[in-house]
Image (cartoon, rainbow, N blue to C red; front, side):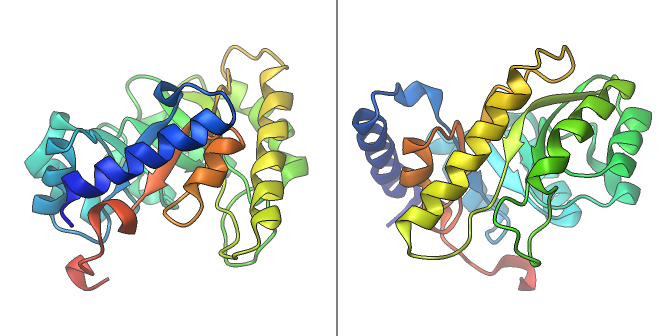
Length: 229
């Protein structure tokens, strides 16, 4: 199937998931994760109406950005090294992986305007995943008040890659509860409205548990193992 056909299937799945829990599908933003595909394939996503694109490496992002630029809204979804902030911070619209003070400090130093950020949380506790432990999230976000160019718009997590639906739901519910806790603090620098959670294998479950941003790669744009990845 081409990207347009895939997008139609995903849109239908989003509508059905939202219907189950009485949500408006307009509350869900689909991010096409284009890290494993060519710029041409990324452009197909835009033509199919998916204008939010996600990249996780500086090199892949800059290559696509040079050809697509403002035709897309750019989400950096991978771990970002502090030394690479200067190369991408003026081009990305949203960062999904804020998880340490040194990164916040560098963003604040390099950005011309406030950057929309998701704080990444390692809900599952897996060693292979980046992110803060849940108990450290609120103190971390409170500390970010010292960095006016950092604006926390929500929390992000990656669920364990398992088929156990209850484990997935538990992960997403914990992030939602944590989001609610942060949001209830009413911090000006951290409205924390959104939840970035759910990928190709679990996005419908994530939506049922409150996801506002889903990150879809293989099911939407496929996997061309572009660039040797």
